[in-house]
Length: 330
Image 1 (cartoon, helix red, strand yellow):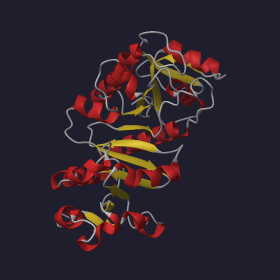
Image 2: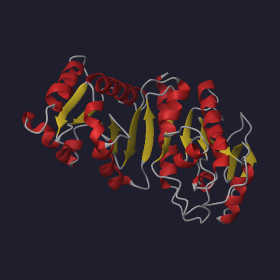
Image 3: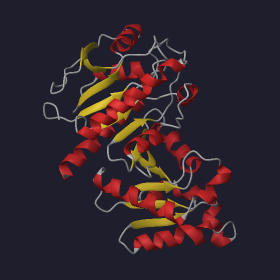
């Protein structure tokens, strides 16, 4: 805590992308939190000058409070100069160092949550580091066996059973054990971090028409329904399995607090259509609070001042809300 408000770590992400300038723009607003941007201070100042911002950069001092028009930066040095729009694998260790420092601070209680600007998976892999994304990296670093991706926006919360898999691999990946663990994590975090005492989850089927009674696939009958019945017996409020093509209508959505989709492109196109530019990626199941933007590095916009900070602002707002919920329930 700082001056009575939560302290949040904001990682500035890929230095050649839009992350540094989006983070710099956080100081344009007043927040009910102390925001600390992790990044190279000279890079942040250079991007501020390029976009014509009058925000001032100040070295982060633990225990200090937020100040209007001032951006607190926890400085970590670039490995080599960063050029807007031009990736350089030499800076991959710097990008990972930002994540490691934010995670360290969250685990130690220095930060109440971390918010991540976008990274570029390909250039990190080009540096010889096997990196499939923030979610997997943070899970490995914290020793978390299973995490759940959930996107939030436009009044929707959509969590996923499987994430980045070929569509042909999805049915075999949805096992009773995975589905049950995913639902338990979703239920627990909706309660503990979103303040929902008895969360209601709408569960999508895997097949068209949720299998049409077994005529279009038996995954609903053989896998999904038995898990739902078992967890309902424990008191969870679970609706489904529902046909995905009719699940995302206002009348049905009004009956739930979150949707559980079976695979990436079953649930996320709907949410992104409704909220792109303001959506937030939340990692459930971690011992820390982590939110993120729902877009990439946008190399073509880097340094132009035209990148929309809406998703980052929404990610910060949600992280503040989650941190306050956790503090109030402690």
